[in-house]
Image (cartoon, rainbow, N blue to C red; front, side, top):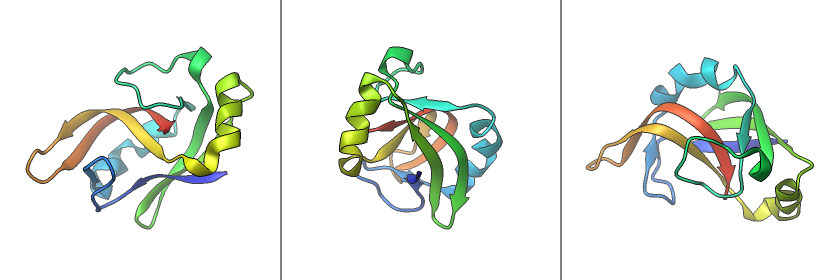
Length: 116
């Protein structure tokens, strides 16, 4: 299923703004490998295989959104996600910087898109 991973140019629930022009340079890298995700947005780079709930592929920009195809895995965490998907949003886990005045995020690398 195709889901929204990021909405561009608006303040999100985390108090951050993602700009489309900062994500465009990452698209090739994002689509070069499967991106596994977990149920929580953890402050680490690695996704634990035992905690993975889904995989994201075919990431692209559609209007003001970054979208991706999500496959829910047949894992214990995947089963939780399958039952609770409508109550979750996807959030990037990455590396970059946040401008303290404008709240704009400049991603340099994305490690995961987690379902929170």
